[in-house]
Image (tube, rainbow, N blue to C red; front, side, top):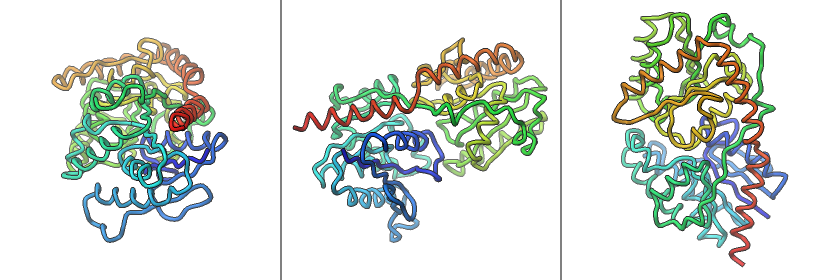
Length: 388
């Protein structure tokens, strides 16, 4: 079976959970199918083709530049039996590839544009285009893969024209050999983090979705001895960047031990930070699953996360971490409760350690990438047999 896998992110240019998903899924799929990966960028290698936006669109709206990459990807799919796209950045390529080459299209939905209205702040009128591309691909795809049960429900609610039979649940996964506890402290020391004091850790992009401003306000309730470490970069817009910087500076003036690491750290360094975190914080206001929580759990960190989307399918409340109810209309209450629970675990090392141990066990038992890849191939086979 010849499969074309379409994505914006691919190593070394991975900045979010969808990119992590594609990286590890592709690694496992190569032993099961004949795989070509199409991604953004320059150059390429055997089985990897990189595509760039048309130079004529330099400076144009990002959605238009994305569509030019999609056309390049679609043109390169000749000879494939199945096309599999990830995120709206590649879904239109999958749809056009299906029409152009007469092959079935599978799309994995990592998030949904109708549930991310703040993207209009980033894309302007391009948000209408990204929404159109996602809807068109979703409603015409031969199969849609949802990364959680909650995501499946959201897909069917947002796009009721889709036949529910076509929506398959396949969880994200985690490599528990790459993400495993690292008890060295050289990275902490180099970054100026005191290994003798507990710290709350955040890893993610500075976006409305990831809820970083909520975390900064919640951190006002942390005990004075608890540090806050933010591995946070790639702000969506100047506005969210400015809001983040203002809140960070305000918090830094009132307490010591507030650390911001704006650059994207290599995976081994993130692993060490996760290992030593008293608590990992995930304040997302929307999260179809949340690979980052799996990464934290695999490294033995207790998790405090918002009770949204697919997060409860990963974080077992009271066992591997604590969940905080989120209501858009009650941000103050969310921030109060988030700060309270973060502080509760950060100041109770025995309970946090027990949750971390339980989290690693759960990650190993239930979220292996080999299982994800095999289940994905079953979806390919099902739609290919349906066409015969």
